[in-house]
Length: 168
Image 1: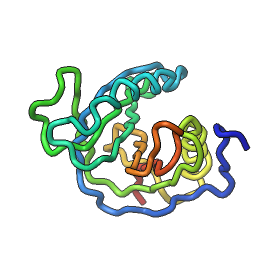
Image 2: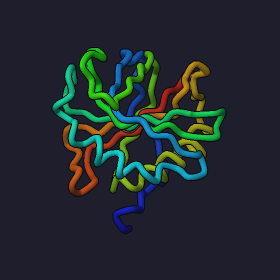
Image 3: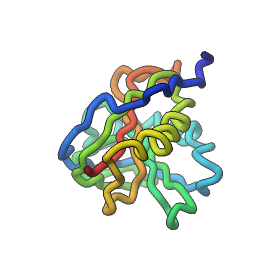
Image 4: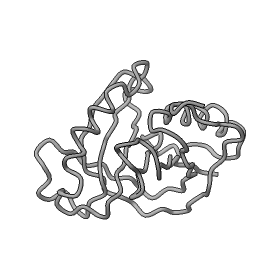
């Protein structure tokens, strides 16, 4: 298996987190057509990476990649960000997104960061249809990536989770 392949056999969440507290995420937003995918995500992460640890009000050293639906499935808004305590004194090109309280199915992504689209594809096309879970109607985002403190940006591996909002 090369570094971009991910083993998706019997994919299932590592855990379900109930009533996760709302989060305010601040970062950089880019839009793309749905059929283009997130081809510019590496450049966006490179641009955002220099801000990590220097953002006013930043909470912990965890980074997020948020994927929002745009134009009724015609596009994707991708936000690279961190959780902040408030939106004061943010860099000029930053936006904020408030994630409401949801239940989440949390999947560990094993392998290189470039394999995340394949993991998400399996979650949405195989796991969700086979379970009792569905996307909450009030959610305007598909999922988010959570890059924990053990994530290594040099190797693109370690401590990556995919958080999918669900309702039963």
